Length: 342
Length: 126
Image (cartoon, rainbow over all chains, first blue to last red; front, side, top):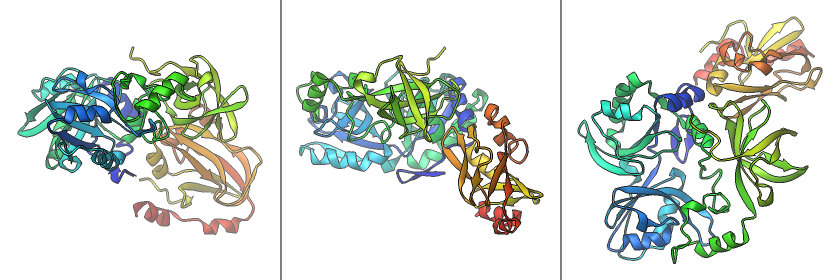
């Protein structure tokens, strides 16, 4: 168990590698009760929220969600989150546990008077169920899953649940929320129904290896208030054509001038120690950046990672060196994602 | 959790097997089960002298890198090369083929500082 944003969370239930493979091959379930939920509603909720977040909410139909950023005035990332439009002027923001209070305070401070903003994090338990057999599992629960990026409310064994077809692993799957008091019952029900499909409970360790193979960023490691979505390579979730949102001016300039550093994905070229956060990155003998995430990829059996490096060096195919305990190990910048489903 | 009676232990989860003037060192069953999935072992340099509680090796699991300490003062006289090809030996046989290094110790009295199985068992239970 480790302490994570004030929650006690298992890094692993049995083994990170076994849990990782369960998700890639069958199905795995993660406890995501720690994630925060903020609801936003009111007459002008949509218009207002569109000035707070980078992606374009006007493109969201009721019952769908999108990945987006909450930025400070300097374009730095306060949080990355999924916003769901659950009614005409009603939204649910699913945010990182460690940022929930900060997000709420930030939104509240910029709140127009007619917006109803509520932190509902304490009311919900949540799980992510991920893997190629997720559809079979939900069929066993008599549930038809919504299409990708859609969210539906329904009842499973008299428990009200919200199911969103999304995830953080690169596999088909859902993230779902239910009343906190139903959490244990729901967890046990899914484990029991999932047994024929090889379900495993999965911890933070496997969540990290799975997302890193897909090059999905982790807030606090790859994203921070000192980094903006352009340098993180996530400009596709920023709509600069929107007339006004916090951080827009700064991002426009960053885009025009090009970012100083870029987040790249890399793979080690030799079997050796896996890369880890804060290791220095070298190119042609000089220090050109720093690793922000690293692990041994259970699917590829290579050391992999993400690093911010000087933008001119951030080219796919470029050879770099990762300094590990004083020794440099060869690595190569690769295209994202590092893991591709065969 | 397996804590063999005939070994000595450190607070930092190394086990120690006395072999005359030498000791053999690895990490405990408890330590390997906490780490799981050992993927890389950096072995100590042969003939290096180490003080007690000095980091001499590194065991890396998928999740993290952990330093392995010399339990007492001594000189490295053997390292387990088999771990380079098969680091998972530490998970499968922590007290056997998964040993990490052997030290020629300076002073056998130093071993009195270490924990016996009962004391270590108590540590990991608490």
